[in-house]
Image (cartoon, rainbow, N blue to C red; front, side, top):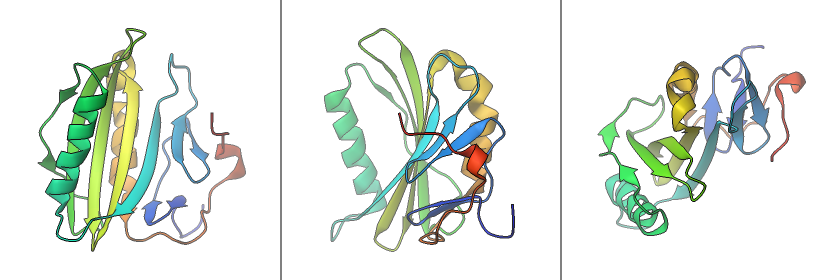
Length: 162
């Protein structure tokens, strides 16, 4: 794969892509193995408002989830180590869709300067424990603030955005 990152999106870079996962350009990663739901890792970023902290930003996001998702189970933010981040926190959420299907999300918030990157790893609850090792590879391979270069990944590891 070469010396550079396996994937770059915005200011995020990923040193490795787990086996069975594919790149969705400018979006993140998707599990392409057999699953009842397309599990994925999506990355976004935005600037903090003046005077806001990472904790303020996370609380605002959790308040939005509480308003938009009935009976969402929100874990407490806890520190996590993300290379390149000045500060990083992780939150685990569980919720049930209108269809009755239950989901688990790991949300990783990484701050570098005023920029906050969010990596959201989503799976249906019954598949989460099986996919957790791949999620660990993704989280341990992510870097904050090392992006903005063009992604370098193998074309056969790409899949379309659904």
